Image (cartoon, rainbow over all chains, first blue to last red; front, top):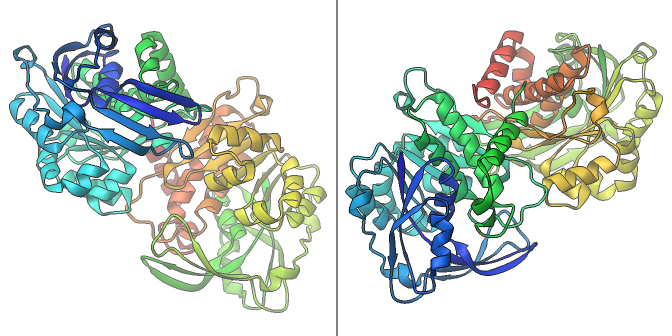
Length: 310
Length: 310
């Protein structure tokens, strides 16, 4: 089944305790698409500038990702500069050059109209809402956001949340969006805004899924939150894109399955962690370009081993 | 099998967003002993003052806890005053009145000499070391400590660590003790100081066990860290003693089993989380006095349900 993702395809300049890279391929849609491509067909809607070369596009097409929706515009691609020196858990943004992204108007190619799954990566909620309204008949809509939109574009964001089946955000965002410090209370408030399922990412501590609509996962559904572990890692080379890679593994696996069941959903949470754990092993998207399905399955078993009683 | 615990039996005055209590029964050894008492025989070594009444002692003896090692001294019991208003994750200490604890010299009753398991709760490492040296033939030694001893009594603490099989501390303590921000690196450094197993508690995110000595758990042992979940709770009434209750559930279950196997160890991690989750439901030790074995087993199943793929 096809996932349509709208979001940023960008260049990142990143500094971490392990070194630095300049203008490496990045962006939420890129990380998401690469991670999801190991599970299902992915179609991308984004805008890039003249600095985006055929070699960059090949990174996506080599993974079977459909780039018909990748619009070329005059000027430079979106460019983010960030540093994790001193704190690997949170990026310090040193620069955000929107460039071609500033006037981005997502256009959905006709060939994308039959996409069954929609992923609204972290972009302006006005754009998320526009794509959502043009893709009315999808089977599931999953979205991401960030503190900037929560703080300064709340009204637009609330409109997007109404149309989401699943919202994937991190602890700080869940607390900020709800105004609650307690995670359970925060989850209830966020789900009351629209999403039927809330997945909260805890970084090195894994992720928790909360459910407000049991019928979504069938009769024998999950009534309690579900917690998936993260793999303790001795070296995190570059955390950029870990959350988007989690989303790609999670949603890619969901979209690859014929039915939503609690077991499928739980496995999707584990695959999210698995793809996130690969993403941070190298700078940029390097690891996500080269991982094999066998390595993914082996790591899935490792996630089971480190968290299961037997 | 019997666990001998040495630590504080004290009174706590606690303020949380849910209310406040004045001079309720507390102390690391109290929380630990109550939690462990649901699994095995527990013997306590501590000192109390004249304000410790037969009613207080009955809280322990009602749970079958052996209080022969509870020394009475002239003066008042150790009294801690703390507040969680504003931050349920970290206590703000408002007062520490050592009282009779200031001159505490642990004495081990002859009837305790055959104890097979030793738990060194969070007290002065000089006292921990003394008890350890008098209990040479125990089957296992497990210990706790805190930031105060790590920062200002490091030399004494390092001597204690050399004699530990298992050290149970929280994230911040592991990072402080090792000087490493990465949890895996911190764990390696801490285990190089002595403990063969390190259990790091992550509060609302569960706990991780690290193993440096595989032979400890038999041939088919655990090579990777093991992560146990915490139960997402809508209401945390009073976090005081959650870590000690975790330790009691963890160690009490271990001591109740004929053999150490990876499966037993993993279950112990889950029982730790279970007892911690009960402890915070009410002020002080109230919940730990009244929980039933059936409730413990039901919650153990809940921990499995929220973390297992099937």
